[in-house]
Image (cartoon, rainbow, N blue to C red):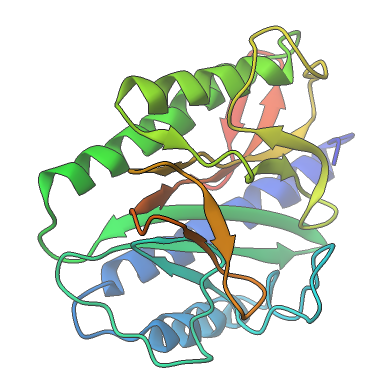
Length: 254
């Protein structure tokens, strides 16, 4: 999506505010003993209460054999992304780290965001993983300036994750968003500064650093959606929808 007028901009900003409110409500419900299906039900209820639509529910991404069956992706520990919350019973427990990833459609505008949160008390390495990945998102956003290149974002994300001693999951990355859930361009979380497409004012992008404690090689579960680390190491995932404005990026879903 390229924002062309004030009405589009206002709808985008409102969509982001609505998603952020739902995310905050979900974050407060993460606790030991809570099932992933409970979180999914709450997310759908809150989105529909605002007369909006879940962007993930029923969506069939390129290469998928079936529509996604839930509102939320809930990915626990070694689940990297796209953990399905409502096809088998999964209950959060103390010490887990859990990624909540979802989007909504408001007035025809799609926004997307993710956060990884601790369940109760977690170990220091998990805290470091979450901190590094969230910092990587901030570093990428800081490079989303008109005149920069996509590689500037990618390089900043990679540098932040690797500086902290973790690995980038290279198979996955960010994307354009706004008119549809997934649009061009694909935004890798690794790369060379100064490379790639030019960033322009009005672009709407979903930046999403994804990191792993271990080797970062991934495999896809039999459900066709859930990525897991091959070595069983934990993963973290943070995402914001941003709008590139004249003086830099505006976080839409914050």
